[in-house]
Structure formats: structure tokens, C-alpha cells
View 1 (cartoon, rainbow, N blue to C red):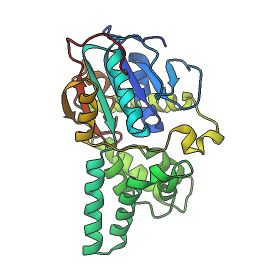
View 2: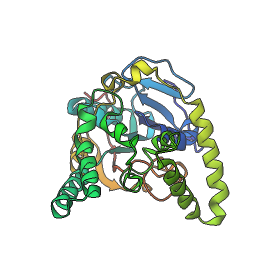
View 3: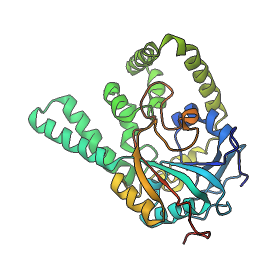
View 4: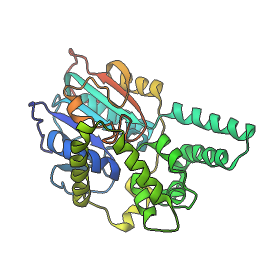
Length: 314
């Protein structure tokens, strides 16, 4: 794999699995500034500046290559042992003193939401509360047990009773592409709500920043047209695509994972914070539409010790 260097001369590694909205918003940045590895269980040839790789296997980079790494939503698609080996690979390819950033769905928040909506249903058994309770259950189980792409969540996103206010508050931008599909059905009404929501986001932006927001939007639309796509036969099988979730993490388990592979100075960040040099220029976790995460997650960073020994992680 060829190492791509950022405009400041640093070598940064970006690893992720999937996400159309994430690609649309952030690919103009990471394709230009980062070395990119997309998690793929099936062998695929490199496409432009994207390398496809099965993260259950060692990374094709030399020891001490990168100044930083951002692994976004891949650990949960690996078993705990596979995740341990992958974290060891990140340690190996990072330079001493480099920052490693990882993000996953936040098990702590998911459990709190489940308990909250369970109590709300018992206190007030309304349609709204049952709807939100059901989503909290799906968030725990659906991606683990689903037999087809999207599972029950996708079915709910395409239904007529879509609660967009709740979905946006809980999931950020991650499901935005499905609101677009709903717009194609006039009787649904969800498209109008999504359009009003997008207008609210635009009006919330300071006037001086509106031109930049419009430019970013045009770039993301163009980028989405260029995005490589898998065949429908593959997309429909969660086991083949790696869509299924195999483990879940919180801030404690991520700390234990990273420290167990030799990292130190573990800290929890928000979507806009990072110790990665130049992160304010990349902002890979923050939505282009507001001060919130594209995909609400737990963000944890750690550093490879400056006195770290050379060698391959086992």
C-alpha cells in the first residue's frame, strides 16, 4: 500500500468500514490528506486513494510508518480477539509518540437509552415512547442478528411513521441517505420533514459561513457519485460485507484494549477534539452541518510511548 502524505508532510492512517453519509461529507478531506484503508472481507483492488483490506489480517505497512491513526467504526465488526490483533497492528505501524484515535458505537450510552425508554414506557405507555423504546432494543441487537442488509432498522427508516426528530437526535447524520429515499414516496411525508430539518441546520449557520457550507455540500454530492459500490448480491449479505456487529465497546473497554496493546495516556474525546496534529483541518468525526458527531460514538485516543521498542505486534 502506498503511503499518502498530508499537506503538512505528516503521514496519517485512516481506517473505516462503510457509511455513505460519512463518505459524502469527509472523503474530500481524507482522500487528499490521509492514507486510506477500508475494511473489506472480500478482496478488492485499490480504487484511487482507497485500499481495501481484511483487517483480520496484518496491515501492509512497515513498522513506525505513521504519525497518527484514526480507526472509525471498525472494531465493533471484529471479534474481541480480532480487535486485539488489529489494535496491535495500529501500534506497530505508528511511530513512537504517535496518536491513535478509535471510535465505536457507545455501549454505555446505548444501555442508558434503553433503560431510559424502558422506564418511560412503564411510566407513560404512549406510542412515541414505545417507538423510541423499540429503537433502543434494535440498537443493541439488530446489527448482531440481522440476516439481510439494514435489518429491522432499515425497515423502520422506510416506514410511514418515521420519527425523524428522534432519529436525528440519536443518530446524527448516519441515516440521512434514507430520508432521501423516503422523499420519493409522496404519501410518506418524511421528505418534507427532512427538508425542513436541513433548512433549520442551514439557518443555524452564521451568515459568513453559509457560502462555505454550500461549497462543501456540492463537493459531497459529487463525491457520492464517484464512490465505489459493491454489487447488490454482496450488499444483501451482512456476513459477507462485515456489516454484522461482533462486539460492543465503551470508554472502559476501549481503554483496556489500547493499554493492553502497549498504548498509554488514554483519554476520551468528543467529535471535535483530538490530539492529532491538524485535526481542526480534518474534523473527520464532526458533521459538516453542525457541532455534533456524524455518527454518535465513543471517541478514545491514546499514544504510542516515545520509547516504544521496534517490532511486530503479536
